[in-house]
Length: 153
Length: 102
Image (tube, rainbow over all chains, first blue to last red; front, side, top):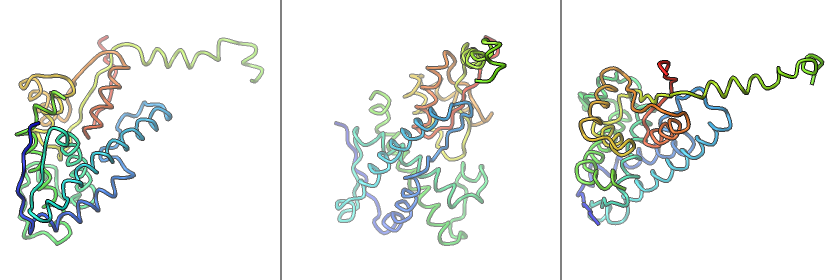
């Protein structure tokens, strides 16, 4: 099984985990990307929403499980063919929620380019934006090294 | 059941026929832009969900990015719904549209 280990800075990442866990909590009852289809019948929509919600919750749990004892002792997280797919999806879900909860004032172009002076941001927004960037980096690492195992699974 | 329905039994099935007709034909799966998901992530999802090669996935991603939407698949409603559901699992926003040309 293909596996990569990522050494993270404990000093930088550990303080972000509270924000990530808080946002993850908000995802337990809400879809990160709400259904946009308007012509689904109500029963069908409820079924879809419940299934998407369950899948999203399971993905987020896999992401949070990366930050276990090994991470806090050595700053290392392990990504492999088994967790790559749920982790990359959970990162997308949390990034969408971070935008909705903390980064609403950022324009679309700013978010796409991430061209922001972090030092000028207020504390809650600064931390949220750092989480947003950190999760994007995690996604890029997975896509760079494990995308074939995701696509072929 | 009221008196008018009794006198005209054809009025009852009409909505069902209308619904059935509305869901027939060709449906498009349209992915809408969002400023959050990474371009590389969207390309990977398109390759995974639709089996696109790199250049096709990239072309659709750029359409989403530059035009706000891309038609990624067209066909029967049931399969279109399945694709839309899968895209939502990947946190991409998808809608279905009837293909007026068919």
